[in-house]
View (cartoon, rainbow, N blue to C red):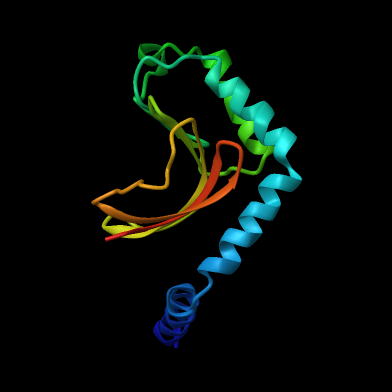
Length: 157
């Protein structure tokens, strides 16, 4: 009986996951994300200014409970600054953290999947024009929001 319950639970979770894949919710997702960012724009702008002021020396990934590189002092960020960034990310409801590169910052609002593939949603702040953005490893759909902000849906191949 226990095994039967596990199969039912697995089937329900699988079907819920497939629902997002099988339905065409891309437009609704981008509209909802755009509405959320615009509604909370001042909080996002404040968090973004906090992150930008640190002038990272390398690419950095900051999640709620881990970072890459593991020792952020190599990227020029102290423990106090890391805590400040995490507080700002919680305030704007970005549970999966950020990826900081030379040209852009990705804010991860949702992430689901296995190491071999999955789905990620979030926001991008950049000074570059993303109309010709292409990522060969992943399928990333980008939607312009306002100023230098975009929303994205990414499906790993």
